[in-house]
Length: 213
Image (tube, rainbow, N blue to C red; front, side, top):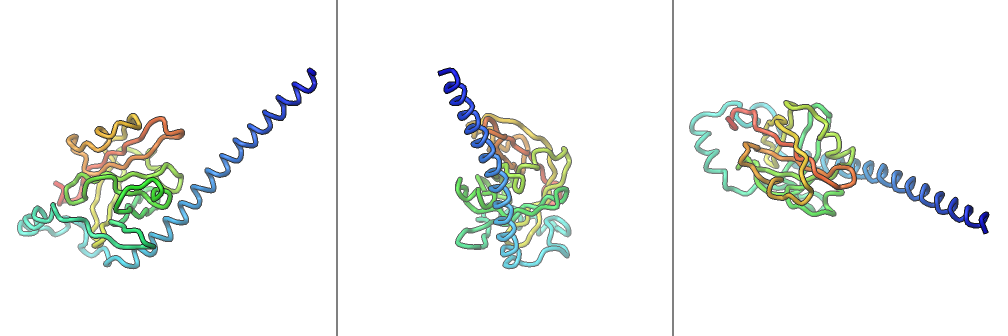
């Protein structure tokens, strides 16, 4: 009886180890797949967007008249580009990570498996909140970036908005009010889960281009 009991415990232990190994391998595969999907979307997205650069960045040559127009446009809807049946408001660029990530127009848990999604707000109102999975190929490494690191958002019109990371908070996973609050001067918030989903990282960013001054 004792031998049978030990054999049963050994079998259970081996099954648990196999399950843990399978889960780890699946997570690696899922992150790799998400990176491939995002890069494919990014390529299609940039192919449909107007060219960037040569004065396209917000604030590079802004006049008082331009500033007035900017205020008038604050309430407009963000333009979108359709790729594979989903609409995207543009893409994020992280120069320090050499990474670009497309951003879907509407938040949905299943959509997050392909790309980060707009959770709320608008780039024109300086209150944009973007959710992303903590895949290594998505937002995973972003939470480890230093304060002052540059983050760019390029909208569907090809206009570039420049930010820098100002704070990184760890919040309760259900604290939506703190996640989306912008009264602390945050023009852009990127949020993602911690490993295991017990908390969320909120990467708070402020505008640094002239239009945001």
